[in-house]
Image 1 (cartoon, rainbow, N blue to C red):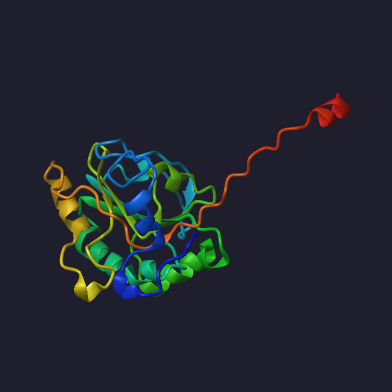
Image 2: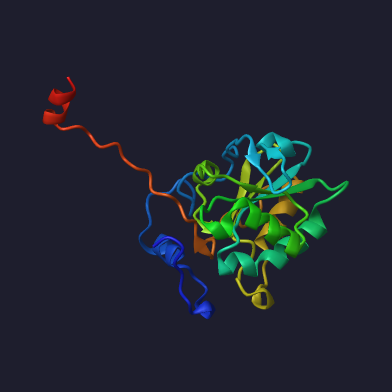
Length: 224
Protein backbone atom coordinates (compact mmCIF):
# COMPACT_ATOMS: atom_id res chain seq x y z
CA UNK A 1 0.00 0.00 0.00
CA UNK A 2 3.01 2.27 0.32
CA UNK A 3 2.75 5.40 -1.77
CA UNK A 4 -0.75 4.61 -3.08
CA UNK A 5 -3.52 7.18 -3.26
CA UNK A 6 -6.78 7.71 -5.08
CA UNK A 7 -6.31 9.08 -8.58
CA UNK A 8 -9.60 10.94 -8.14
CA UNK A 9 -7.99 14.14 -6.89
CA UNK A 10 -11.27 15.87 -6.10
CA UNK A 11 -11.95 13.30 -3.39
CA UNK A 12 -8.80 14.50 -1.65
CA UNK A 13 -7.94 11.60 0.66
CA UNK A 14 -5.06 9.16 0.43
CA UNK A 15 -5.72 5.49 1.02
CA UNK A 16 -3.68 5.78 4.20
CA UNK A 17 -5.75 8.72 5.46
CA UNK A 18 -9.03 6.85 4.91
CA UNK A 19 -7.66 3.81 6.73
CA UNK A 20 -6.54 6.02 9.60
CA UNK A 21 -10.00 7.56 9.92
CA UNK A 22 -11.85 4.24 9.87
CA UNK A 23 -9.79 1.42 11.33
CA UNK A 24 -6.38 2.76 12.29
CA UNK A 25 -4.22 1.62 15.21
CA UNK A 26 -4.23 2.86 18.79
CA UNK A 27 -2.84 6.39 18.61
CA UNK A 28 -0.83 8.59 20.94
CA UNK A 29 -2.43 11.75 19.60
CA UNK A 30 -5.73 12.24 17.84
CA UNK A 31 -4.25 11.03 14.55
CA UNK A 32 -0.56 10.46 15.29
CA UNK A 33 0.60 6.96 16.35
CA UNK A 34 3.65 8.20 18.28
CA UNK A 35 3.26 11.77 19.52
CA UNK A 36 0.60 13.75 21.30
CA UNK A 37 0.30 17.51 21.67
CA UNK A 38 2.82 19.02 24.14
CA UNK A 39 5.23 16.09 23.75
CA UNK A 40 8.85 17.15 23.23
CA UNK A 41 9.90 17.11 19.60
CA UNK A 42 12.20 14.10 19.05
CA UNK A 43 15.87 14.96 18.60
CA UNK A 44 17.92 14.09 15.54
CA UNK A 45 21.58 14.56 14.68
CA UNK A 46 23.83 14.87 11.63
CA UNK A 47 21.28 14.64 8.84
CA UNK A 48 22.74 15.78 5.51
CA UNK A 49 21.18 18.73 3.74
CA UNK A 50 21.23 19.63 0.06
CA UNK A 51 23.70 22.41 0.93
CA UNK A 52 26.33 19.89 2.07
CA UNK A 53 25.90 20.72 5.75
CA UNK A 54 24.79 18.42 8.58
CA UNK A 55 21.82 19.39 10.73
CA UNK A 56 20.40 18.46 14.11
CA UNK A 57 17.36 19.76 15.97
CA UNK A 58 19.74 22.03 17.89
CA UNK A 59 20.80 23.65 14.61
CA UNK A 60 17.55 25.62 14.82
CA UNK A 61 17.70 26.62 18.51
CA UNK A 62 17.87 30.34 17.70
CA UNK A 63 14.27 30.25 16.47
CA UNK A 64 11.30 30.66 18.81
CA UNK A 65 9.19 28.42 16.58
CA UNK A 66 10.26 25.60 14.28
CA UNK A 67 8.22 24.12 11.45
CA UNK A 68 9.19 20.61 10.32
CA UNK A 69 7.67 19.28 7.11
CA UNK A 70 8.08 15.74 5.85
CA UNK A 71 7.96 15.93 2.08
CA UNK A 72 9.51 14.41 -1.04
CA UNK A 73 9.96 14.81 -4.79
CA UNK A 74 7.95 11.79 -5.90
CA UNK A 75 4.48 12.50 -4.49
CA UNK A 76 2.01 14.56 -6.53
CA UNK A 77 0.51 16.01 -3.37
CA UNK A 78 3.92 17.07 -2.05
CA UNK A 79 4.75 18.66 -5.40
CA UNK A 80 1.44 20.53 -5.38
CA UNK A 81 2.35 22.03 -2.00
CA UNK A 82 5.81 23.24 -3.02
CA UNK A 83 4.66 26.72 -4.03
CA UNK A 84 2.79 27.03 -0.75
CA UNK A 85 5.92 25.97 1.15
CA UNK A 86 7.97 28.60 -0.66
CA UNK A 87 5.34 31.27 0.03
CA UNK A 88 5.16 30.33 3.71
CA UNK A 89 8.95 30.50 4.03
CA UNK A 90 9.03 33.87 2.27
CA UNK A 91 6.37 35.32 4.59
CA UNK A 92 7.41 33.81 7.92
CA UNK A 93 11.10 32.87 7.86
CA UNK A 94 14.37 34.55 6.99
CA UNK A 95 16.71 37.16 8.46
CA UNK A 96 15.40 38.65 11.68
CA UNK A 97 12.37 36.35 11.82
CA UNK A 98 11.52 34.21 14.85
CA UNK A 99 10.34 31.23 12.81
CA UNK A 100 12.54 28.53 11.33
CA UNK A 101 11.58 25.87 8.83
CA UNK A 102 13.15 22.59 7.74
CA UNK A 103 12.00 20.00 5.20
CA UNK A 104 12.88 16.31 5.50
CA UNK A 105 12.72 13.51 2.94
CA UNK A 106 13.06 9.86 4.02
CA UNK A 107 11.96 8.05 0.85
CA UNK A 108 14.66 5.80 -0.57
CA UNK A 109 13.94 5.70 -4.29
CA UNK A 110 16.01 7.31 -7.09
CA UNK A 111 13.60 10.23 -7.52
CA UNK A 112 14.08 11.13 -3.85
CA UNK A 113 17.87 10.85 -3.69
CA UNK A 114 19.87 13.74 -2.26
CA UNK A 115 21.08 14.92 -5.72
CA UNK A 116 17.49 14.91 -7.00
CA UNK A 117 16.35 16.77 -3.89
CA UNK A 118 18.97 19.43 -4.58
CA UNK A 119 17.85 19.81 -8.19
CA UNK A 120 14.22 20.08 -7.15
CA UNK A 121 14.91 22.62 -4.42
CA UNK A 122 16.95 24.80 -6.77
CA UNK A 123 14.22 24.67 -9.40
CA UNK A 124 11.51 25.68 -6.92
CA UNK A 125 13.62 28.18 -5.00
CA UNK A 126 13.61 26.58 -1.55
CA UNK A 127 15.09 28.99 1.00
CA UNK A 128 15.01 26.52 3.89
CA UNK A 129 17.15 23.45 4.66
CA UNK A 130 16.06 20.26 2.90
CA UNK A 131 17.40 17.16 4.67
CA UNK A 132 17.62 13.47 3.84
CA UNK A 133 17.43 10.62 6.35
CA UNK A 134 18.37 7.26 4.87
CA UNK A 135 17.60 5.54 8.18
CA UNK A 136 14.03 6.93 8.15
CA UNK A 137 14.35 7.22 11.93
CA UNK A 138 13.33 10.85 12.17
CA UNK A 139 10.01 10.21 10.42
CA UNK A 140 9.31 7.16 12.59
CA UNK A 141 10.15 9.13 15.74
CA UNK A 142 7.68 11.84 14.75
CA UNK A 143 5.03 9.33 13.72
CA UNK A 144 4.88 10.88 10.25
CA UNK A 145 2.84 8.89 7.76
CA UNK A 146 2.37 11.10 4.73
CA UNK A 147 3.97 13.66 2.45
CA UNK A 148 3.46 16.46 3.08
CA UNK A 149 2.98 16.36 6.86
CA UNK A 150 3.71 19.26 9.21
CA UNK A 151 4.84 19.61 12.82
CA UNK A 152 5.09 22.90 14.70
CA UNK A 153 7.39 23.09 17.73
CA UNK A 154 7.23 25.98 20.19
CA UNK A 155 10.12 27.70 21.96
CA UNK A 156 10.36 24.82 24.46
CA UNK A 157 10.42 22.48 21.44
CA UNK A 158 7.11 20.93 22.38
CA UNK A 159 4.80 19.78 19.60
CA UNK A 160 1.85 22.17 19.40
CA UNK A 161 0.49 21.21 15.98
CA UNK A 162 0.58 18.10 13.77
CA UNK A 163 -1.09 17.48 10.42
CA UNK A 164 -1.78 19.19 7.12
CA UNK A 165 -0.84 22.69 6.05
CA UNK A 166 -4.40 23.69 5.23
CA UNK A 167 -7.87 22.31 4.59
CA UNK A 168 -7.59 21.44 0.89
CA UNK A 169 -4.82 19.95 -1.27
CA UNK A 170 -5.97 22.21 -4.12
CA UNK A 171 -4.50 25.63 -3.38
CA UNK A 172 -7.36 27.62 -4.92
CA UNK A 173 -9.87 25.81 -2.69
CA UNK A 174 -7.97 26.09 0.60
CA UNK A 175 -9.72 28.38 3.08
CA UNK A 176 -8.04 27.64 6.42
CA UNK A 177 -4.25 27.59 6.83
CA UNK A 178 -3.75 25.52 9.97
CA UNK A 179 0.02 25.88 9.78
CA UNK A 180 -0.05 29.68 9.87
CA UNK A 181 -2.58 29.70 12.71
CA UNK A 182 -0.39 27.31 14.70
CA UNK A 183 2.73 29.40 14.12
CA UNK A 184 0.96 32.59 15.24
CA UNK A 185 -0.26 30.80 18.37
CA UNK A 186 3.23 29.50 19.13
CA UNK A 187 4.70 32.99 18.77
CA UNK A 188 2.07 34.20 21.25
CA UNK A 189 3.01 31.43 23.68
CA UNK A 190 -0.25 29.53 23.41
CA UNK A 191 -1.73 26.44 21.77
CA UNK A 192 -3.67 26.81 18.52
CA UNK A 193 -7.40 26.14 18.47
CA UNK A 194 -6.84 23.34 15.96
CA UNK A 195 -3.97 21.22 17.21
CA UNK A 196 -4.23 18.18 14.94
CA UNK A 197 -5.59 17.45 11.49
CA UNK A 198 -5.42 14.50 9.14
CA UNK A 199 -2.58 14.87 6.64
CA UNK A 200 -3.70 14.42 3.04
CA UNK A 201 -0.98 13.08 0.78
CA UNK A 202 1.03 10.03 -0.23
CA UNK A 203 2.08 7.49 2.35
CA UNK A 204 5.76 7.64 3.25
CA UNK A 205 7.71 4.81 1.61
CA UNK A 206 8.89 3.12 4.77
CA UNK A 207 11.13 0.10 4.40
CA UNK A 208 9.93 -2.96 6.24
CA UNK A 209 12.10 -3.91 9.16
CA UNK A 210 13.52 -7.36 8.60
CA UNK A 211 13.07 -9.79 11.46
CA UNK A 212 16.00 -11.98 12.38
CA UNK A 213 15.20 -15.59 11.53
CA UNK A 214 15.46 -17.84 14.56
CA UNK A 215 17.67 -20.87 14.06
CA UNK A 216 16.13 -24.31 14.13
CA UNK A 217 17.34 -26.94 16.59
CA UNK A 218 19.18 -28.76 13.77
CA UNK A 219 20.98 -25.57 12.73
CA UNK A 220 21.98 -24.91 16.32
CA UNK A 221 23.40 -28.43 16.70
CA UNK A 222 25.40 -28.08 13.47
CA UNK A 223 26.90 -24.76 14.61
CA UNK A 224 27.58 -26.08 18.11
